[in-house]
Image 1 (tube, rainbow, N blue to C red):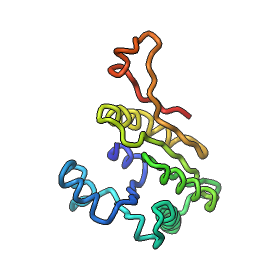
Image 2: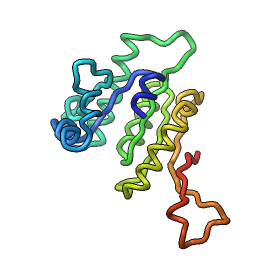
Image 3: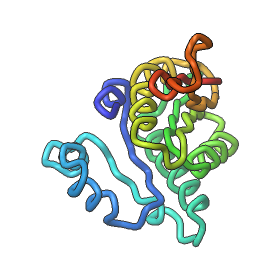
Amino acid sequence: VLQMAKKLGKVVLVTAAEEGWVESTCNRFLPSLGTAIFGPKSWVSLVYAVKFGKWSSALQNKQAAFRALVQQHVALTPPPPGKLISVISIGDSDYEKLALQHTVRTMPMVWGKCVKLTRSPAAWWLQKEVEAVRRYLEDVVSHEGTAEWTLEPTVPASVTAGSAAAKVEAQLAV
């Protein structure tokens, strides 16, 4: 998903985690992701939201981080006249969605696009979500306007309840 995102624009991971958490998690479970973020040819930016806000609230820190990052991007790469910047948030907590909504309200040059994932999903469902994000990411990026999508399980009507888990598909629902 990150490699696809790289082809579509600038990739920045904003986390409310404590500093060092992403590094240690990557080292333990996802070394190839760690290379993309921390390696010599890194192309993903990692931002700890706490560095942008000094509040005790993860939400306020994320709001401050989103705002500062958008301002920084606009300063370095101003959009053409009449064009808006798309900021896409993909996450499992409400913090991402609320921080993005705040950014859109306070920065009129931004289209906010939020993809809400399931909080604490089972591994099989997380895999379905990642597949759905990969499948729909280009559509999310090219969508003109502010929008929110939620990943929801859909089960074909012909599937019996006992076998539903094996055939559940993740689809973006507007």
